[in-house]
Image 1 (cartoon, rainbow, N blue to C red):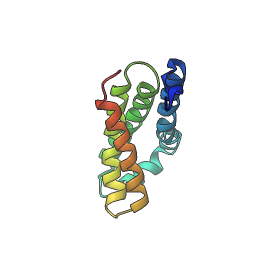
Image 2: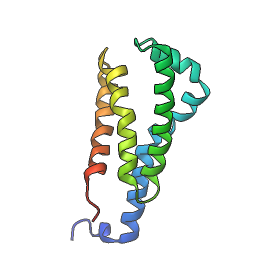
Image 3: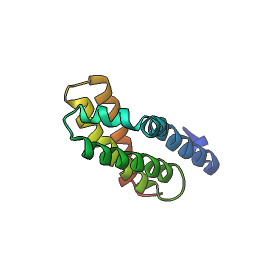
Image 4: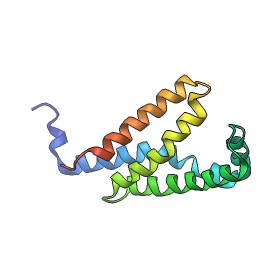
Length: 126
């Protein structure tokens, strides 16, 4: 049988967990910079034409989405909730910071992440 090792439940569980950690790593690595460089990040958001008070609120929301999304996505049975939180962060971020002006590599990388998160959000458990 082809790929019979994937029928082993512990291997599948490990690969599932490893995959969720791997996808989340990009989001988790962004959290410290957004928290410790809060004002600098607010200035960058404001440079995209978003007023400063709103930029601060959006950044707080982004940090919350990153923390809760990564946590739910990696741990526990609330993986779908985690996917939604990460999508709430990633979709507007991609549009605001990478589509206008168009940064091809960043857009395609984010589209891959968006696709993976959508699959995770809509897939029924087996």
